[in-house]
Amino acid sequence: MRRKLTVAFAATALLALTTACGGGSADSPTSEAARNEVLPMPAKIDTSNGLVIDGERIADKELYEAAKKDKVVLYSGSGKESEDLTIARFKAETGIDIELTRMPTNKLSERVLSEHGANQLGAGVVRVTDPLVAQQFAERGVYVPYRPPSYDELSKADNVVFNDGQYLTAYYSAYTFGYNSQAVQGADVPKTWSDLLDPKWKGKLGVVHAGAGGTVTALAAFQIDAFGENYLTKLGAQQPRIFDTTSVQLEALARGEISVATLGFNSTYGAQVAGAPIKLVVPEDGVSGSFNLMGLTPAGEQSPAAKVFINWTMSKAGQKFAAAQGFVPARPGLEPTPTGEYQLPAADSKQFHLFTPEDAAARSADTIRTWNKAFHFTG
Image (cartoon, rainbow, N blue to C red; front, side, top):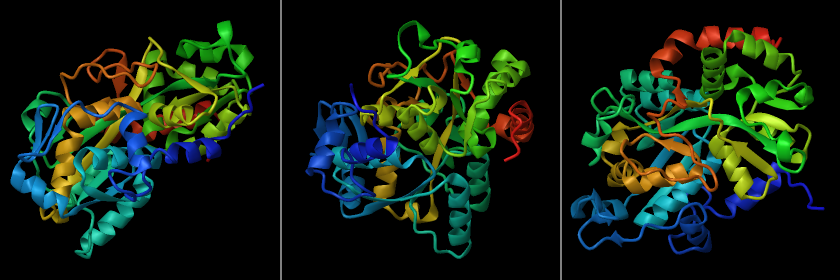
């Protein structure tokens, strides 16, 4: 019988595919894996006159030559596994160095505002997962206007360009559910959100509490909107195991301590790729969506590498790689890119339910209170 893998082991395997915080060269074995494990490298990268990837100009010659002598300093509240993969891919496609500082968005916000207030913010690009934090950064001048080459295309979509380019939606996070593929098989595999209410999952379900972050608040809001508050009450009656973080939840699922769980798509897919016995479901009755936002800082205005990083992230190549990791691209008009065996809905699909910045401002507190009541959760 196949041995069960913990997420700790899976994470180690996954990180073997990536560079750690920008270490490693574009020709290293880790970069080579990053080029092809998640998504094959672009068919053509032309650096003869700037940087052109599959026919799309990412940077002109002057910007690209300057960027190769520079490095990206990235502060991010997004997941470390996904950022490590992104770093390795960016370096492989561009040859530009990049340094990552990663922490949860709430802690990152404190650091960024402190450093910015002291005129010591070294990051050229800051990425966060909370629309309200991004808005605060814009108001405080942490973010400065910048228009990548794809700006006109990005402007055609809702919720992608904010304040005339002061910050952008890099991509969207998707939240759904999944199961331990050793413990749950055949007809027992859940296919819809209502399947999680089946009595057979009582005491075997895992959830992250709605106050833990923007993605899980968005999930609770989606469940209320799509299925009613009574759905949360019934889900709470399943006596689920409640987690503070996704990483601990994933480890419990991989070990078989729980059988099914509501899950962040990209982090779960990373664990699956690394060998954890976990499968995801893309339910036809809806997927919850939330934001990953980024902006250029005053330091980034002086950093050619930071500008190229934003240009690349919003390019077709960068957006396709995000989709291959398990995010939903923000750039409109792209051909669907599968995440392994899965296909997430497009951002403008009726299947994708996005928790907008307006929703976050108006509804987050009430949504968390409703969830806490349904799950008898006191924190």
